[in-house]
Length: 227
Image (cartoon, rainbow, N blue to C red; front, side, top):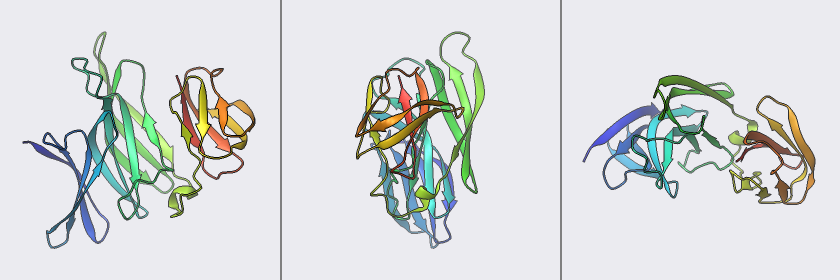
């Protein structure tokens, strides 16, 4: 079967190769470790149930490894449609996913989003690639997105991360612990909702889009996608 090397990083001790395959592990993010003598190490496999993942890049930053590309629901069998949204995962030095980091972004409905490269810099990252409108004139264009890296990501204690589900949601989001006083801002920084909650927030009054939810009880904020 065909295997494709998409990117390569070196952390000072080990080389990590981002791989895409058309074999039995098709649809997973794959990272093959290789030591400086050329011996193969562990093969890391990252899965997202019900989604096909396509690896496009790796990046090493501050003891972390970022892997990403695009994903498409397995249920989407539309001809010519290959990607649904851009995704990036952050791994610790044991190649385990850090749950406090989330990057899942799409563009307009019906558009493909295909990230091609990631560049990390101090406390933020830039991801770039192309997007394609499947219907209509079928133009291919460019996109650029940025994301911030906060202090929480650099911590090795993730037991108190602020997490919500389901995400996306059209009615209510639930938190894994007490929320307390909260604020929700849109991506321009405008405050659109605030209050106090135990473990759920009604978001049905918000327009569809992506928002940032923060709580007084947690140092990290989370993105909320309203459908």
